[in-house]
Image 1: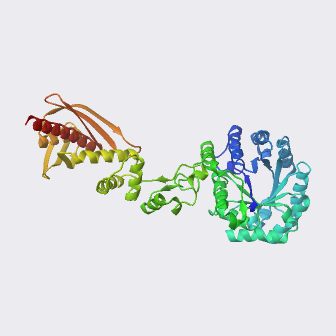
Image 2: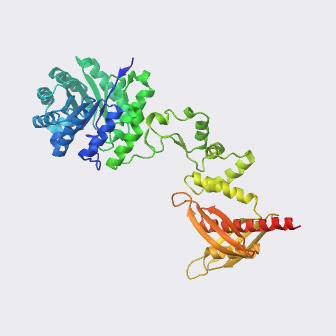
Image 3: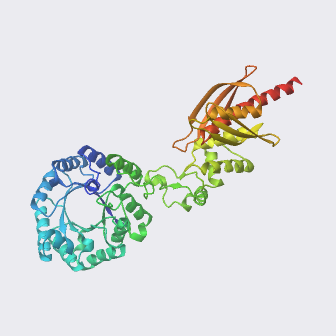
Length: 513
């Protein structure tokens, strides 16, 4: 059986320290409910002495949690901080006070103005004092990532003897390299008496983008608690992201000799909740919970995923509460991805037809970041309309503006392959284009209806135009056309209606004969 790794969530404390991510008490309670659904082991609810609001939040979270998780309150190595934490946790069923101070040369010299011996003395005092008020006391050795190995071991030894049950070894500035941080944890495991009787925790920041790697290095070398946040929220560049470290442990359980009891199916929901409350959006390519985490755009990747998901996905999206893998259709997509999407939409085509549609798809994809289902529907209908057309649009050039007159130059190709070009001007570009088409087709009609709608989202969306024309004999014909250029869509729609009119007349003529 692998070691159980305790998940200590500090979204409500360290996460809230991220600039712009402040939360009120009710919002913290919402996140607490989600943390309980996930099954976190410890919830760091706040820093009670910092404000009345934080004090109230810790109280109310403690009431809500009951015995489902430990509720932790942060303090400095100051008696009044510890008193405030104890008071806020008074009704908690599983309270924990988290106290400590800086142990690096920089923190001792430049911030605290103390000697190493005074550092040890303060560490022992704060733990001893907290133990008088709470049975579960966790000590943090702030900036341990830049501390002296020997001094850090002395501090840990002293607080263990003073009664600390957990010792937090933070890389507060995200300075360490993973190998060196793992070595530091290993050193403590080898040089501190009684360390196997306490929990060693890792708290890593992401200043160099290595928070998850640092946390895993700590676990590999003996740590059994990870302090993390949802979405990696936190000071500066943030903390170890819970979703990343939990899934890494799950995929490498034997190698790390570790497991967690977290319900990973909640990750996507938890991520979105924290984003909506804090307004801190994760980037699209964020591991596990980003919008592109299970999206495939490259044709090579799409082909592999469609054949077998595991070729390019190491995690099943459903395992983290995400929707199924998403095939993003773009100019980089291949035949396999297009065929798959069309089949999902209910269309099946032979190889030649699919090749023809694929060419039209690429023409659209070259002008759009992503091709949506509505675009594909339009492409299919455009393709069907072109198969039975007497006239097809070969070229269209528009010139318009103020005070010049709108002018259209249209080239149509008939069913025998002959191309004809005409130029006309009108009250607007569409009117000019229609008049040029009339000069070529030569069929009298009245435009009875004209409408435009956007098929998809964004500035590059396809626009679909629907027109209805009335022939001399009173028959009504409908035409549709779509394109990224609305004038081209309008011309295609008009030509489609005229083709229907001409085909109807040709059919009647055959019947008369």
